[in-house]
Length: 48
Image 1 (cartoon, one colour):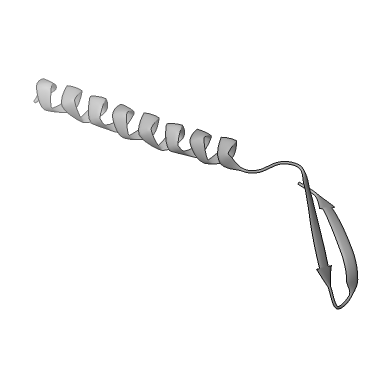
Image 2 (cartoon, helix red, strand yellow):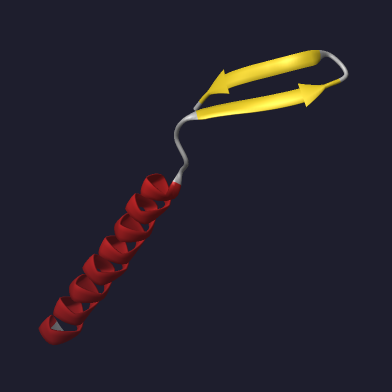
């Protein structure tokens, strides 16, 4: 029983670290800068 609990803890930690790594990757992929849109309402400039 102790070995199964140890394997479960290791699996949970591995999954948690994979999820955290993916979220960090997604956060770093967001673009930063200025977005300029031209439409019917005129020109819109947004800082990202």
